[in-house]
Image 1 (cartoon, one colour):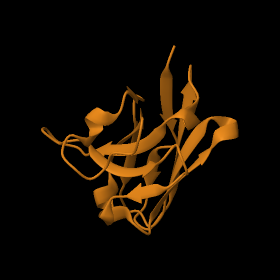
Image 2 (cartoon, rainbow, N blue to C red):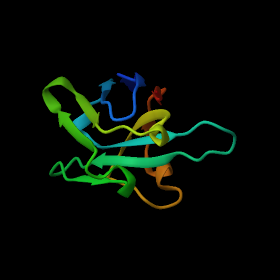
Image 3 (cartoon, rainbow, N blue to C red):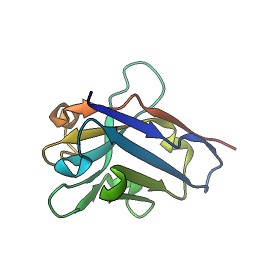
Image 4 (cartoon, helix red, strand yellow):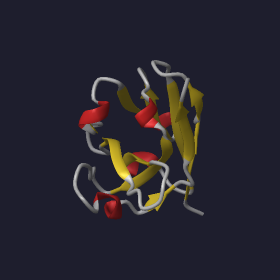
Length: 128
């Protein structure tokens, strides 16, 4: 069974850090580019691409709003992709999802539809 599982969410203070993990079962993560998306609270919120790491050469791509604060990395030996989030802001509050795609797709409407597999999400709350 193909499955992605996110973990590592929680509550952090503004300026704090969290590290999210995306683990795979039923397939090999390094066969895919892995993207991190988030969906904020409230009705009608779209899923927003945050970061992506490519399968071919581990190139990384980021939403401008998180550039310099978030880092995506992969450990193929553990079949896991990480999202290190530093200098967190209240506007980073969201449910974070990881998805698997043939290549990175980020930064345009409908990019999330390029991803074939998704996890169930992990809640990140940034609040004092």
